[in-house]
Length: 103
Image (cartoon, rainbow, N blue to C red; front, side):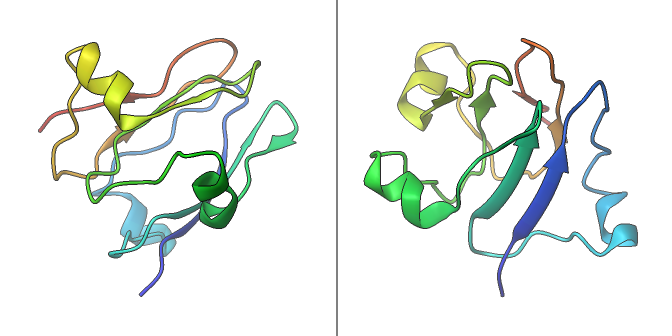
């Protein structure tokens, strides 16, 4: 039961969660991610823990692509984007933000 993702974001839109199971990428109850953005690799959950960015059960993130700055859940709340239990994503690249889509 792991959720390992490989997300490349060069001008590509990730599909909604309803379409992800078709490609064998159905999320489970753990948050392990491998996110590539502009030829840079984001590290796994273990190293996120070292930087105080522990993924919550809600799986809502703001991720910038060029400066590779992952904003934590507390900052999402401040911007009125508190994560929901849905796992629907709309992911952009090139200095755009990954935003949560509330179902």
